[in-house]
Length: 373
Image (cartoon, rainbow, N blue to C red; front, side, top):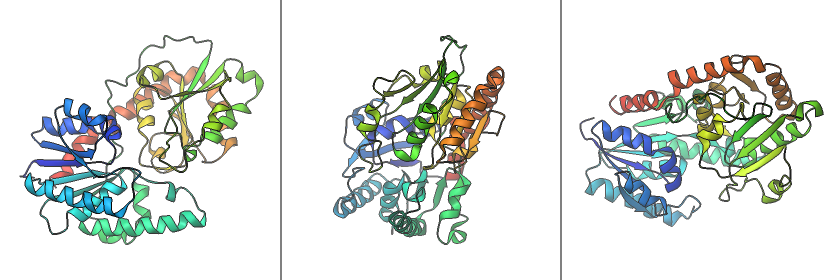
C-alpha cells in the first residue's frame, strides 16, 4: 500500500477510544498517517490527546435517520478526497454501510470490519428473521464495493448471501486483539475462602444474563456458601434488548449475586477472580471480555456460539456449553468447582491461547498484512 493515509471510521467515540486506539497507535508506529472520524462526544478530546486528528461526523449510533446517514456518507467522501486518504477502515454495521457508499466512484481502498452479526442473527422469531434478511441484503450491497471484508470468526461467513462471489475479499482475523501486558496473570492476593466467578459484559439479554443469574440461584446450597457471582457492566440503553433496571434491582441486597455496574479497573477485577463466565448467545465476533480473561490467566465458561467457541479448548482451559440453558450453566459451574486443583494449569492454558492467537501484535499484524495484499 503506497498511500499510507488511513481514515478509521466508527459510530461511537467511547467504543473507539476503548477498543480501537491500540490499533490506531500500531498503524502510526508503522508509518501510517491516521485520522479518525467519530461523532462528537466527550471522547473526541481523549482521542486527540492520544495524538490523532479527529473529524467529527453527523453519525450517531442510535440515529437511523436516512438523511443523517446520507450526510455522513458525503462527509466521509469529502474528507477522504481533501486529505488524499488511501484507505478507509470502518468498524461495525452502520459505519461499514457508510464506508461502502462513500467509496463509490472513488479510488480509496474500502475495508469493512464486521465485529459480529448481532441480535438479528441470534434470535429466530418472525421479526428477527425479517431483520436478518434485510441485514444480509445490506451486507451484500456493502461487499460489492469493498476491497476487503474482515470478519472475526469463520462461522459468520456462512450467513452471507452469495458468499462464494466474495470469497477472495472476506478474510478472518480472530478478534480485535488483547493487550497481553495490561491483562496478565498475577499471584492471587484475594481472600481464597470465597470463590469468585466474574462476568464482564454489556447488559443485554442475549449475553445470557437471565440464564446466568438463574443458574447461580439454583445451585446446591452447600456450594453457595463460599461462592459469589460478580457481574460488571451497565445496561445498553441504546439497544432495545437491554437488561432492565427492574431486573438489576432484584439483586440490590443480594450478597451472592452482585451487579457492580460500570467499572474502570477490569484488569484488577480479573486478577481478583477465579473463573470467568459469559453464557452469551449474541452473535459475537469474539468478545473482548473473554480475551481479557484469557490473557489474565483465568479458566473460562462460555457457549458454543460463533466467536465464543474459539476461546476455549474443551476441558483444557474451560468449558463450552449449550447457549440459552440454565441447566448447562449450572452443570458447568459445578464441574468447574470440582476441578479447583486444576485451575492454575487451566489458567496457564488460557494465557497461552491469548499470547499465541489473540495478542494485539498478532491481530494487528494480520490486518496490516491484509492492507498490503
